[in-house]
Length: 129
Image 1 (tube, helix red, strand yellow):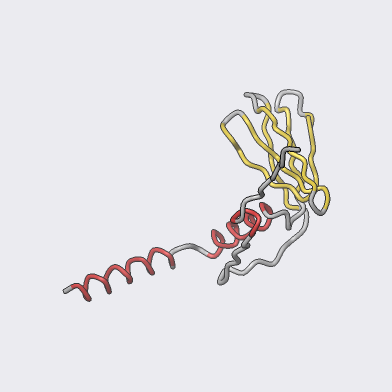
Image 2 (cartoon, rainbow, N blue to C red):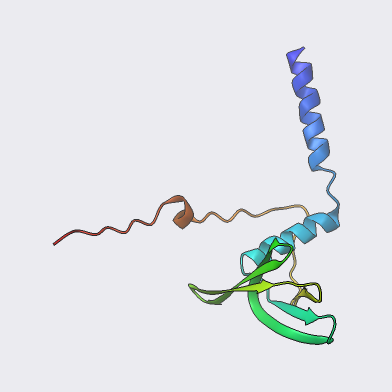
């Protein structure tokens, strides 16, 4: 009985995982690449009343809608250099993100980036004189 329940559980889990459409997987993979600063983006903040661009940010940038009213944009500007911009969104200001280059991503494979610096803490040792 336990083996049958385990088999049914595994089949259900595989069915759920296999239900993602190719477009969803490709979209998720592109977002992953952009969030790891592998894609060039143009992020534009636009005033809907005046029909003017308020701000344009271009580069290897990741953005996150922190809330309905705030967006954080983090851009990689060098090997170990980053800039972060926080922007407020109002009733008449909106934003959009445009991917500037195409990127081949697989709908069948995934990639895991292991960053030892996150797992191993950075210790700052101060010795009194």
